[in-house]
Image (cartoon, rainbow, N blue to C red; front, side, top):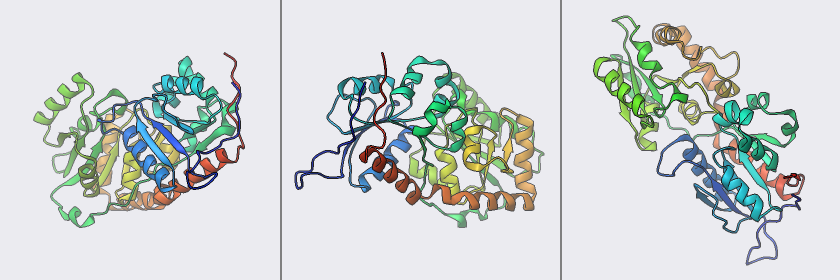
Length: 347
């Protein structure tokens, strides 16, 4: 497969324009309010701000475009293959998700092929380099996920409860019931309450969540909410909790940092890549007792809680929207200048 320099679409008003037609694919149905959809729609907005025409869909249907951006190396592979077949000369950006980095690229041939054919790879935090073969490092770019500030701090004055917000669909990768199990171990005087927002994508986990909510007064599952309502709940919380076993990064983390809500999180590379190795709010993956102790410390140890807040405030610049916009501007400029052509792949 050979390639040529990136040539943007022609503008009817000029001979040549820097504006391009971009097809952005995300494999989950767009009716689902999941992280990939939130990321895709935010990126579409950013790319339009940069002056480009952007279409977002679940699959690439062969439409004319200048560039394909595909979220998920494995699940978007049919779209990637179709684009490569129809437009071998055009650039392709493959965005690596958590299941890509921490599972699929190590054992799935379609995910591995997506890495090979991509002009650029995008990862969402720098610890992704540890998972990628070194031959792909030079074409990988890190783009931190951003979030608009959403601050409603006045509502956190209710001292009767210590509100912990858990945002994540009910699926195994999120370890969604770990928080509910952990708060069973809290002393009776604890004010902690878990508010869990997320769609049930697993029938077994849904049954468990419903049963847990009935018998556990510290755990409330709200199901799926519109994104704006989710952000409001998060901004009114004392703490954001991420219990995932696997993440490429996390929109929830970005939104918490942007909303000045301190975070406690499972110690996994996809979160450490943003929070840093020395972040004080980690618990070991799947460690119920460790999570219970960390939640209680966040509630009762004012010095530790202030330390969490300072650490998160120090990281908030990483999730500023202008930073993400500039990262995309630089990446598209690289492609426009033809610094790297599509790799030649032997079938």
